[in-house]
Structures are given as structure tokens and as C-alpha cells.
Length: 258
Image 1 (spheres, one colour):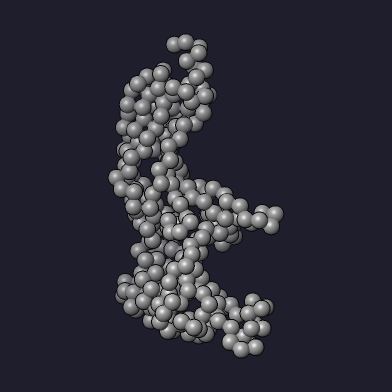
Image 2 (cartoon, helix red, strand yellow):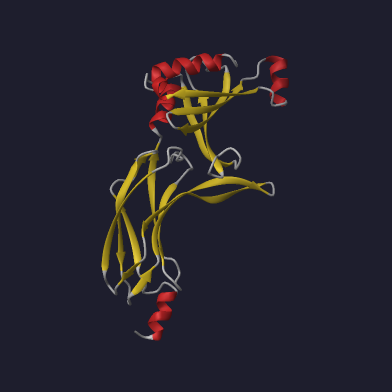
């Protein structure tokens, strides 16, 4: 084994590589992800301290009066302990893990990817990136269907920096709706929703933005007094009653603020 080859491997040239192959690229939050990591040896034998998967996304943060994009690690999944890969050897390591229930969904500008890394001593950490489509958790899916039946159209989904509100994550995912039809058309400017799943219930934070009406309404809107915040918990047994039942509860709640 030449010194030159060792030096090349230390900077990632001719070193081992990892390729993650998922059984499916469309997964709902709270469900299992399965697949296999294929490790292909390079030009020389290498020791790998660990093999891991990082689940990552992007979020927006305001710094120095401008918005910047930052990367966040949602979940770190160990796949294998230390192993040795021979030159040109191919190893397949299967894995199964569960996505967090509060996983951000991949709607609009909220990408999610799985990054595979090999921890190789004295070498650049080679990584493989695989984008996935994350569907809403079944609890959130019921609420989204209920809002659709009330005539709300999803306008935007953003991951916004909120370290004191996002739990273990530095951001929250905000869903912004507009009343395109139904009972609240012409009564609201927008409805913003945050989803938090804990145990067997779904907690919603709603921001109801009323449409300005007359001089008093315009005055309130100018002072940001036209927004109301409300928090509601929906247990699993209520969500199990279906979207129509949940739509009725949400309609009654929102009407209190319009």
C-alpha cells in the first residue's frame, strides 16, 4: 500500500463510498423508513468508525435584518458500529427506523433529505444525499382535510426559526391558508396553523387574521390588533371521527373570532 494512495484516500479520492437505497421515497411522519446502505470499498482497505444517517431540512432565520437559510438536523440514526471495508469490497447494511411524528412535511419550500455518512479516521467524511417526500402525520392529515372542506386553500408552508417554540428543533413549520370558498370567505384574510403531536393527541395553534371592515377595522389592522391566537387539543378519539367532525369543531372555534 503506497504512501501516495494513503494520502489520496485521506482527502476522499479513491476511498470508500456509501449509497443509501430506500424502499420508498414517500413516507408519512411517524411511519417507518427502511432500506439498505451499500458501502463500496475504495483503492485500499479502510476502517470505518461508524455509519449513520442524518435526516435534514432547511429553515429561515432573520439575521442582521435579512432572512438567511440554515440547515437543521431533525434526526440522527446510527446504522452500524465500527467495521472494516476491503479494497473494492461491497457490503450491504439494512436499516429500519421511524420518522418523528412532528417531522416537517415536504410542501412548497420545505425539502427533507437523508444524508449518509461514513466516519473514516483521518479522511474527509464522504456523504450521500437522498431527498424524500414526507407526507403529513395521519392526525395532521385529518385536520388538513377538514380545513379543505371549510374552503381553506393552502398558500404557503415555511420552516421558521423559533427555538423556544419548536421543542427539540430550532424551527416550527407554519401552514398559511386563505379562505378561497366556504363560510369564511370574505371574513378572514388568512389562517395560520402550527401542528404539534404528542402521544395520542394533536395540539393546534391557530392565528386568525380577520379582514378589516370599516374605519375601526382598518385602525385595528394597522396596529396588528386584527389577529387572534387560539390553541386547541384534539385527542385521537375525536380525530378518528373523521374530517367532517373535525371541520365542525374548527368552524365553531374560528367563528368566535370573526
